[in-house]
Amino acid sequence: MPDAWGDRLGRFDMALGAVNGTAYGTAHGDPEPVERDRRALARLRAEHNSPHSSTGEAP
Image (tube, rainbow, N blue to C red; front, side, top):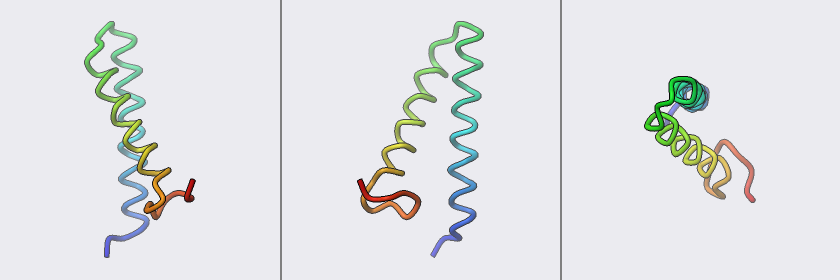
């Protein structure tokens, strides 16, 4: 069973990296990191809202 805190911290790091990449891409006119990181944030959001998620509440 994975460590609950480690899993949350990993997701937090992923979200922070995605926000940072989106900001960088926007500031430098590079659409690739913006789109890639928006997809990453959408995956994290969907996972959080999943009825089977251990990190979020059931919708």
